[in-house]
Length: 106
Image 1 (cartoon, rainbow, N blue to C red):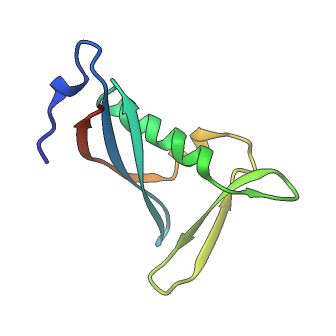
Image 2 (image 1 turned 180 degrees about the vertical axis):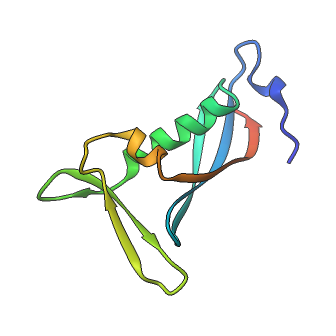
């Protein structure tokens, strides 16, 4: 991918896609999030994590955000934000982040 930093300079806005992989032991969850605006680098990744956290489902009885991680056998590990850490909880499970595309926002 050609990452053109000029797309987010001088008040210009861009749409960036970020691939995030969360994991514990041999369990993984992967997703692609979109970040819009004029940020770059680590700020893009932090924004993608924030967006991913906001989109997580909640456990109905406890109002806790959770994520299901799966291993290669298909086993599921349910992880929940029982410490009420918010985005930091999810960020602590991040094992890989990559900006996979950037394009001007029209």
